[in-house]
Amino acid sequence: MDLGLADRTYVVTGGSSGVGLATVRALLDEGANVATCGRDADRLARIGSHDRLFTAVRDVRDADAVREFVTDSADAFGGRIDGLVNNAGQSRMKRLDDTTAEDWRDELELKFAGVLNPLQAARKHLAASGAASVVNVNAVLAKQPETRLITTSAARAGILNLSKSLATELAADGIRVNSVCLGLVDTGQWTRRHAAADSGLSYEDWQAELAADRGIALGRLGRAEEVAYAIVALLSPRASYITGTSIDVCGGVGRGIL
Image (cartoon, rainbow, N blue to C red; front, side, top):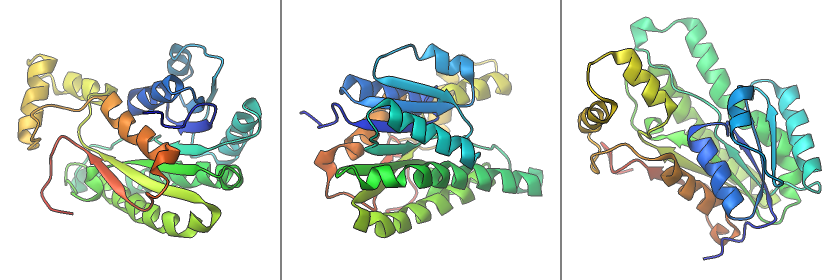
């Protein structure tokens, strides 16, 4: 099926690794122009060169830098932006007693600035698109909080709430807003946590135990490209009547029906 993404322009934050990188590659495969940013210049460089790819080193918490990035992205591809994927972010593995006031401030700033700064910078371009879509990459933690990730769970719940409000507020501008809530996905974060755990288990065995412990029905962690598929589908003009919703990409993990 032709998703109608060819020759359109999409901005993906945090596109140098994991789900962001998989999304960048999926969009390029569909014939789209892609602009992406990240904080690590070396990782961005490893994406490779492409005549439909624009990259820049930026921190989504810096509103001025994000505005510059979005302007440069639009200029690189004929002045248009048709979609935005707010993917930049990370998880903070801490329980309540290990969490400082600074941890709370940092986590909330990263999550909310990671959505609001790119959106505010791209809004006028999106409104002019005629097929604009915003996808906020979130996590099932937004609906199923974990005490091991207390600040991240709370921040992600706020972003899910914000996404719903944005879908209503921006509908008049023809901008759709949806969320993809991922579960455990095999990205660099989990590789680093495996190394830090020093469990003596191979990564494959450690991953299998983790999946069993978290109640993942499919018995494994997800792959970044599996999340990217849902993101790209929501960006597509073929999803033109979908807004204000969230799709769980989590292998069936769940403690509730919502």
